Amino acid sequence: MHLPRRSLLALAGAALTAPARAAAPLRLGMLRTLSPAPFYIAQERGLFAAQGIAVEFKFFEAAQPIAAAAVAGDLDVGVTALTGGFFALAGRGELKVIGGGLHEQVGYRQTAVLVSKKAYDAGVTSLDKLGGTSFGITQYGSSFHYMIGRLAQIKGFDPKSVTLRPLQQISNMVAAVRTGQVDATMAISSMATPLEASGEAKIIGWVGDYVPYQITALFAPSATLQGRADELRKFCVAYRQGVAAYRAAFLNFTDGKPVYGAQTDRAIAEISKYVFTGDPQAAAKIKDGAGWYDEGAALDVADVRAQIAWFEEQGLVKQKVDPAEVIDTGYMPTL
Image 1 (cartoon, rainbow, N blue to C red):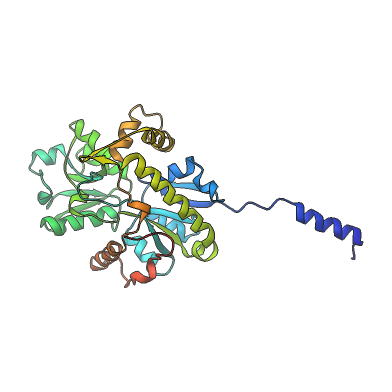
Image 2: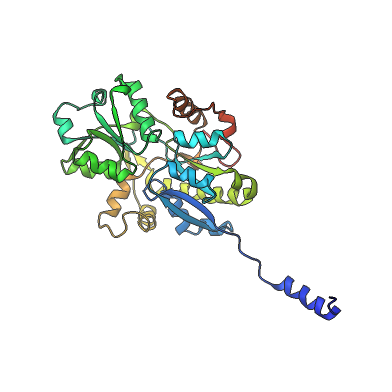
């Protein structure tokens, strides 16, 4: 059927004047904890929108399912702890690490090693005495598995003597040590310090003092890298801006003590929309639990390589993984 010339012109004009369809939001997978705070700030300040992109937060209860969801096509980008499961998927070409996140730092209290009151009273009073204990983790091959394994190497206790208890969720780990179901576990400062203050557990060390490492990282599945690279670059610009705001709010120090100001109050108001919402102690918990982000969310490439090697050595990644194939340094700065 042939349309009259006038009808064709009308259709062409309508096509030219019709509003462009908005791009689908980038779905960001992460834990609903304090650790992704720079992303909360970036979202609340409209930094993603200023780059012309929309970002939708998708929350999970543990790190490894985030990587699996990205491979399944349910996420476009993620920030999570690097795990054996993650590296196994990345080794198959399905994921790439593209930027830094939380970084365990010497002298900075981020992840505490918590011991139950019963275990502490029985003599588990320092990290070198963790041999022979039961230890709560989320899953085998998790970041907690990595941290206790590295601590065993450094403090000289036999990792095989530690009974690992996979508890799936961080909240379960904390509850288990509080009630004495496990002898020890790990928790971020905002969870660990109130537990110690209540007398229900004891902090016997901080991971960053012994194992400074790239605990979380930004990653993207191959579908995003191949099909939405321009949007991903804009996402990374806004993320770096969020990290800059976060560092200005929480990571200024004088004589080793944090210095807070108006930028801190603003950041706390933004972050508390996602964590500690409605908690009268939210400000104190956020300040106490603020973790270290390197400038520009730089990626510690050498450390990621070391993590891959450890997971391979422990048999937690079965195939050989080429770090050059799972790390893409084209999006974010590196250390």
